[in-house]
Structure formats: C-alpha cells, structure tokens
Image (cartoon, rainbow, N blue to C red; front, side, top):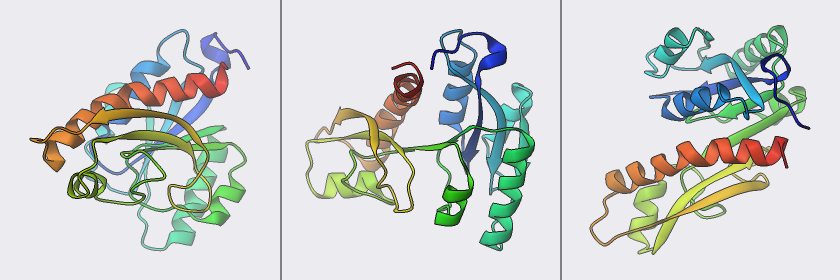
Length: 193
C-alpha cells in the first residue's frame, strides 16, 4: 500500500493517558509527505492528560471518555472511531487495557509502543525491573495489539544501553527519545514495506 497525497492518508486515532510526547511525535510525522497516516482523532481516559493540548495546537478533534464502566466506554470509543472513519489506532501511553471484544469490533489495526524489549517486562515499571535485574540493555517495542497484554506480533524494536549510573528516570528519558523515532519507523514498515 503506497500512499502519498494528504487526502489518501490512513485515518488514525491516537489513544493517550498522559503527557502525549509520542502523540506529538506522531503528529509531526503525519505532516510529512512520506507519512502514510493522518491523525484525525485523539482519545483519552484522563481529562487532565497534558497531551490534550496537542489537539488544540494542531486542531485535531479530541474526545475524553471516562472508564467508569469499561463496556460503556469502549462502545463510545467504537462509535467515535466509526463516525470518524478511523482505520488505525496508535496506543501511546494509554493506561487502560482494551478488551478482546473491542479488538474484535475494530476492524482496522491497533498498534502499541511499549518501553521494554518485549517479550521482557510486559506491563508496568519496566525501567525499574530492567535495572533491578542488572540488564545491560533495555529499549522499546512497537507491536500489534492482540487480546493478551503486550503480546502481539512485534513490528520493530530499538535497544538502549543501560549504564551503571542509570536510574529508572534517566533510563525512561533515553528510551522515550528512541520511542519517538521508532513509532514512525514501524508505521512506515507496515504501510510502505
């Protein structure tokens, strides 16, 4: 699938829960001519998510959907995706696990970026776990989302060396910088192989 003109880009929704730094890098990537995606919708479960400001800055529609009842929240999200003709979802620090049912009902692709070299350290506290286990490397992974947590087919990974002086905070910063490069690379790999 080779897409170039702005009108034919793959309509994408980005799901966030926090700062949205991966969202910002995906938006910048989406503006490039070589990018196969356009970001048409931002979805968050957190009305205080700092990343919502990118919706304002870049004039992208945003929806805040509280996860008080998961089924209700997911139905609302699926309706928004359908209404906006979304074909791709990029999870970018979205701190909710989406259900099998949601994945089945969304006919497009769902991607996630995870701050470890999967299959190592699924779930949370990846940097603390890598340092505690005295790993020499950590990194990040972009993968397809399936019904098991952080277990979908791996698209791309990037290794980051762990130094003796690294703390979970310093390692997180180094890995985040790589995430910003890796996510666009993974999207290009899928859509312009």
